[in-house]
Image 1: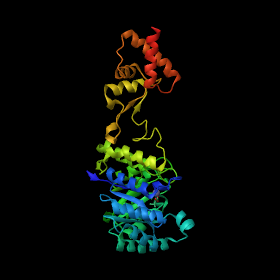
Image 2: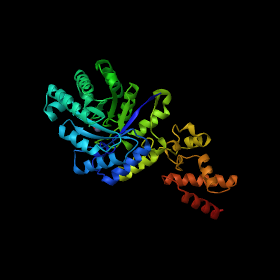
Image 3: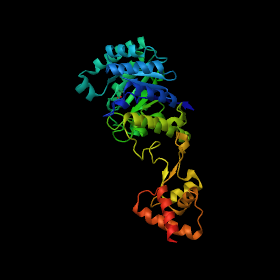
Image 4: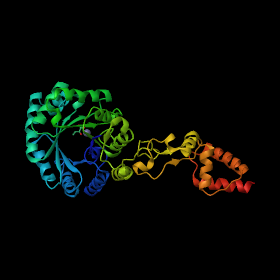
Amino acid sequence: MRQILFMDTTLRDGEQSAGVNLNPQEKLQIARQLERLGVNVMEAGFAAASEGDFQSVRDIARIVQNASVMSLARAKESDIRTAYEALKDAVAPRLHVFIATSDIHMKHKLRMTREEVLDTVRSTVALSKSLFPVVQFSAEDATRTDYAFLAQVVEEAIRCGADVINIPDTVGYTNPQEYYQLFQYLKNHVPSYDKAIFSCHCHDDLGMAVANSLAAIESGIGQVEGTINGIGERAGNAALEEIAVALHIRKDHYQADTSIHLKEIKATSALVSRLTGMVVPKNKAVVGANAFAHESGIHQDGVLKEASTYEIISPELVGEEANKLVLGKHSGRHAFMDRMQELGYQLSEEERDRAFRSFKQLADRKKEVTEEDLHALILGEAAAH
Ligand code: KIV
Ligand code: ZN
């Protein structure tokens, strides 16, 4: 089994979600939980972005013992030196230096030629490597970059000392087949490909961030990047908890291990949601409130007989207490009787029939029938007969 490294960027790209602003205490709380979750690298922030960001990166670098702590830096000497100051007390510091490589970004944003970008990559990666034991280089907007130019940039970055090469899908533009092929292309056109760890970083603009990340893993890369609950700029980043669980549940397919403690997923998701104010959608995979809830009679009957009929992930695996059989209009007799027994009611055959009929009538009017409703229903039945 090969090992896939997890690089969490909840505290940097995740915090770039519109409306999110974490204070230094909140960032420390999340960093501690990410350490418990078992991520290999955490991007603590962008040290040169503000005084607050600098302090957060420095504080996190000082407390984290079991993960590498990283800061983002533009390909500028001042950013790199500021990141160095913020990270110098870390047990395992890492610098993340990036520059855009697509024609759109070079022309309109950077106003630089390809040759100028190549020169900047050479000088800033070399400077980074003179200060940091591990340097990650990202070619921003890689998936919209001319492939031959991207290969040239990546080769230069590795030659100048980059240990990790990130190929971001900055605007969530690619699809799984295309992203897979891009990594194959780089494998075949970057002479120093084997000297670096390749990494994927996907955004979710077209809803494919997790699928694209898994395709990159299939193409042989060694590191995956994302955020908890998939928060991040615009439609967000790839949800790391979904990738970790997919690799675990489909180990037969991916043949890869991770250091993620899956049981910490629920707690991590809840903490990030609470501190960022980004509500987790009910139907979100792995961590949504309905991820382990069953409502239809056929499903409830199946789950009561054998959970694996309709559950490919056991709730306990990700730190969720148990599954939930929601009583509603789609529920069947099996789940209803099961709940009656749980609530301590011993009903005769006739009482059961009557109670089930009343339950169905109530469920037609109400989205979810609660325990209080069931007690009231039995009391009403008893009074009427
Ligand atoms: O999405 C992106 O391209 C980024 C880079 C800074 C790596 O977040
Ligand atoms: Zn990003």
